[in-house]
Image (cartoon, rainbow over all chains, first blue to last red; front, side, top):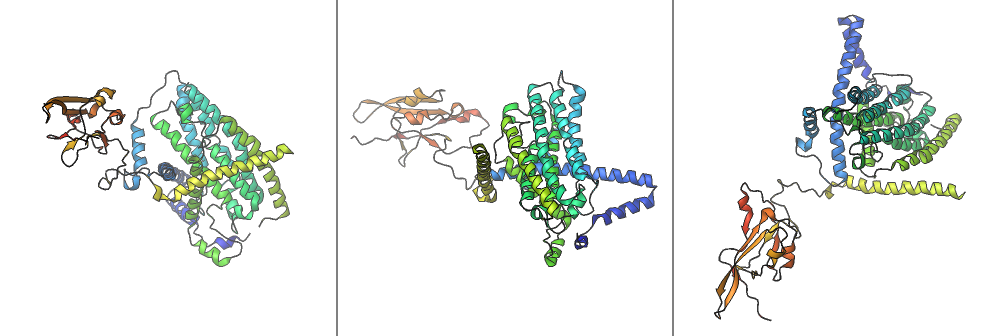
Length: 366
Length: 160
């Protein structure tokens, strides 16, 4: 693999490295590591909050335009401050204590959900060198951690001592257990192609073209399966049975109010971002610009667009597609949901991965 | 074999129908010109109301300040929540016979549900719906309206 082709791309590790060197020159190594952890934590907290607010705004705008409406347009220019106003409202609302609820678990559940999405966020490569946790099993780690969120959902449903919450949580459990398989198999397709589970190495392997183009039709099928299954995994429409406003009032978070409700809400949107980022990284090259084989000139022009722009463009494209799904399709029934997974997506992705293994074995991919 | 072909035809039919739905919403997404929302206080000057809109009950008067209400009271009887009151008067006509004319056609907008029964049942089409909708007032007595204009008279139809 010709890796020096992308050397023109600005590498964020020069920036982070200089910060690291400066901190180490000022204080002892242990203290420097501690300071770096605090800085990264703060940056992630701020990024998390801003991203959540922006995604809620984006969702409302996209859904409005799809439904021929204008969407939020009163608070601030183009309604940009609408979600901030909503957040202030939620912060000031009363946290209603539920009698006969399991209080410890009831309070713990939103934190489990939000911590799961936080942990998954740590492994997302935002740009070249801008990558907090570069595990050699990055894909596996993100999948494992992001499916912890369902534990929080189940706890929330159980501890609220409400029928709606419990039904919502159980549906969510059934849904995530089933769809996790398809997500895993579709990501496995690219792991087979690139021969690594590390997210940074998967990106490096796409230096001469993204996997969705290099992997022929099987990679495209894997991408579609990934989109469908991950939409189901983050409990979004048309797979939002866990919430199902019209049947279960709000599903697992019926009994939550104020900022605890906002935690669930925020975690749902951040999970959407994580799934989109993972899809963009694995299938669409992450921060890697659009490179076509050996077209040196074209590739160099593409390198002038910063890698962070490429990453966010691809991620928001996938987020838009997921929103497009939500505002187009009606909600599935639970039996239809399981039929779709066990009778369609799983067999397709199994045949697909066999095909991909054959392609990789024969070196028929580019 | 049949079940296998059914499986794949189901699959592709499903995909094509999902794609049809996504095409519709995708077309809406890329054509913001179709947005139907009226941004009300800003577009107040250019706001166009549709003729079917039921804003309030009015009694149309022509250029001679004449209306068509004979004061028969059918609208008052048909109103389900009693928001119409008619006060009639008897005045002698040209032949010297006493004739019923309306003194006041009182419409309580605060009680009206805009069901339209008065407009529908009026035998002489004297009532109609107006397009005015900014009815907010600080005193609810202002919602009691007299529909016939002062000094107006009954429009005499030519006898057939």
